[in-house]
Amino acid sequence: MLKVLTFNGVYLPGYKAGGPIRSLVNMVSHFKDDLEFFILTRDRDAGDKEPYNNVQFNKWVKITNEKVYYQNENKMSIWTLRKIINSQKYDVVLLNGILSEYTIRYLLLRKLRLIKAIPTIIMPRGDLAKGALSLKANKKSLYLKVAKKLKLYNNLIWLATSKGEKNDTKIVFEKIDIVTIPNLPSTDIYDNSSITSNKKTGTLRIVYISRITKVKNLLFALEALNEVNGVIVFDIYGPISDEEYWGICQKYIKKMKSNIRVNYYGSLSHDKVQMVMRNSDVFLLPTLGENYGHVIVEALMSGTPIIISDQTPWRNLESYKAGWDISLENKGGYTQAIQTLVNMDQHEHFKYKIAATKYISEALRVQETKNAYLELFRRVANDDRG
Image (cartoon, rainbow, N blue to C red; front, side, top):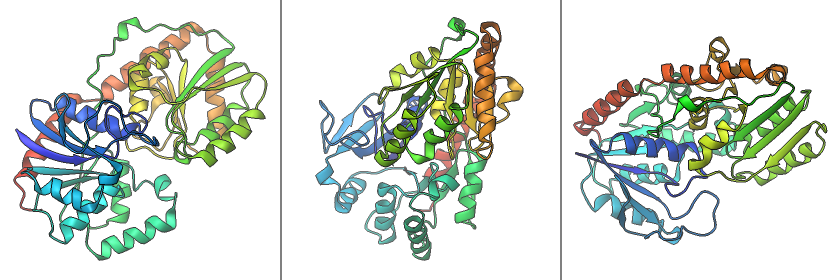
């Protein structure tokens, strides 16, 4: 069984970082019989000031199929990282994100030859999407220029999870070869036989589940929603990653029309996502960009129609009647899609719910994707790049 060392800023039992955790959890679950994962992570959830309860720190801990090393905040020096990497033999290193603190430290150690050579896969994880690069743009641009000059990202195996992410990466790193394999979905069983609709004409229950940050574009959603007629309930779940941005959203919420009720419920643990989705009529996320979007997939798997931007891999939704993927330059299109759902009766809404599950079941070729990942890991383990 190949040993894979990987780094993630947050891992289980954390959940507030959303997609990056789910990507890794799903990979570990799918390859429990083929790959042994060693995961180095922080000792707390995203945004938390206190570490987890009942977790052992600064040592390898067996969870389910993986071993996890929860680092105390005061034990996160580059030298600790060096010691952990050199402490045993790994067949492959998997880097999650171009701009992750772990990635940068690992690449510096590698450049200075302070760690043993290990074949390394790097996944951009959305860091080079146009929307992501527009945030703290000057700082990111300067770092990437310096990193390229130092050749920090040379001799890596590049792996994207969508064509869009591949194109974004090639814009920044023009000369690389990059493999494209989609993310793996959850191994949880979704019982589609129990899908029903309680939708009433003239009403709509909308849900947003994501971090509250500019990239996820909640303010845009609120603005589009405010032009809709009917009885609307908009439930918002997710950690506040940007307090200033949330403050702007709150000011706007106070000015919204009286037919729209907005509720903020804070963070939502992953085990409750399916229930919340199923109790909603539509999932709304006009994101600036997603290389995958686990919560989008989970909405569709739950039988919840979606309204999203055209900056994700999930396209042509309207032709399937699974939802809408709309340009961010067309805010009126979002208002129109929401109004269409408000006016929809229970019978028509049920058709959309069934169509959502059909769309995602056709889009996810799970066994084919698993085979592609396994082939890549096995090939990389025999690569002489390190």
